Image: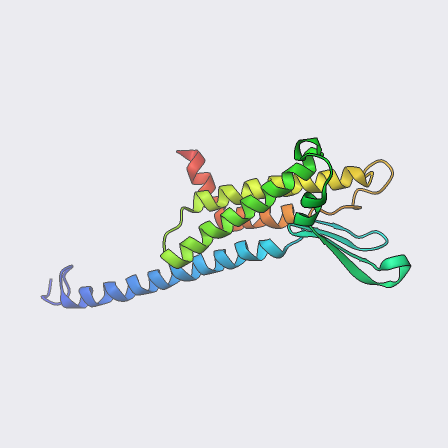
Length: 187
């Protein structure tokens, strides 16, 4: 073996930092891309009700294309106004409505976890993925509650309420955090 080609040689030492730099850049890009997807989920509606006047049920409230008295336009109602103006106590609300703050909380905690991953370079991807799975379940619960109010499967078609948020969140969980979650359960 020649002097310049061994494991401790200068040629080997100079190649390692370059590959370490590339691995570090790749890891940062992966964390940044995951963060973008998690934060984008905050804007994805939990449910879309396409019939007649389009209604969007988001984490933050309702949006509707119906204007006052049939006029063209759009209206909205923020979720915090709904809870603040609600005459019934929180415990008396339907379970699907009580799940709404859980969906918001799980999404925000997952976004905070992913943000810490980007800002600090450290993230427990199992925690972020688990929070997103819980957010998907809570969003689906809200969507199912909305669907039952619209008579889905009985008086209206199965696609009267589309659970966009739960599907998008589950796609991010499976695509971005799936390997980490599977590894957590295989141990």
